[in-house]
Amino acid sequence: MDAIHTIDELTEKYGNDDVYQEKFEIYCQFGLWDDAAELLAQWKKSGSKKARQAAAELDLKLYTGKIDEAHAEMMTSSKKLNANDYERLDLLINELYGKEEPQMTIWLKRAASRQDKTHELMNMAQVQWWNEHYDKAREYAQQALIQIDKLLPDKKKTEALYRGRRALCLAILGRFEEAVKELEIVRKLPLCEHCNYCSCKDADIFEANMEEIRGNWKNALSLHTQGAKQWPDDLDFVSGARRMKRKEL
Image (cartoon, rainbow, N blue to C red; front, side, top):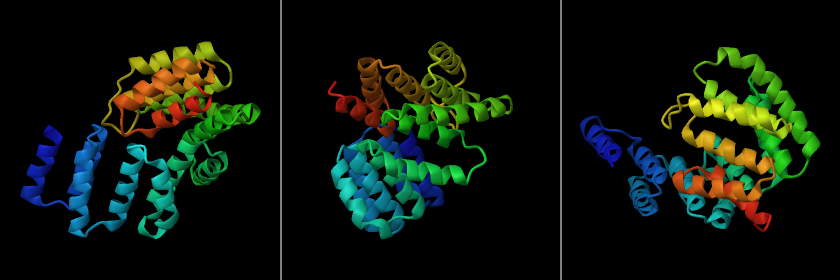
């Protein structure tokens, strides 16, 4: 774990209040749950960053499949969390449970505060599709597509991300051949897991969700399951697998 050693060296030399957070996230990226739990116990003894500790503890519960425990704790620990973490975790838990209304409330709130609404519109389209409100899903997808097509020429650095969103919207609109070609373009563009734009796991979740939209549920389940193993700290894949299992696959 070169990243962990590097963090330790920098911490020893310069000091770093965020070291626990950084190491915790690295352990979670590799699915090293025992190491993450041990570090979290050490972090708690430090007595600092209590709001972030509380969020990390809930994240770890979600990553390890203790969704009901995390949900119960969320109901009693809102004061321990900062507002951003509470909203993020609330969205994740409701996505894992497949609850439509709470997800839509958060996405609508976020969309209202942004000029570029493509991420929010795409996600609202998906939520509506997963809940079989197909006409409403197409409305949101069409709105997202219009905005993506306007923004895409100026998004060279984030082209892969916007094309991935575009592929998913095209799939929801039933334009599957275009959607597949768009995702093929995404796969050929530079993708980096450590950047803030589009990564390999983003492309993988776009593909898994597209298969789900196309009705290829067994293939979607396979892709979601593979993605959950490869990217253990990304719960989009877990949510997708749970959706497929609710279809009794």
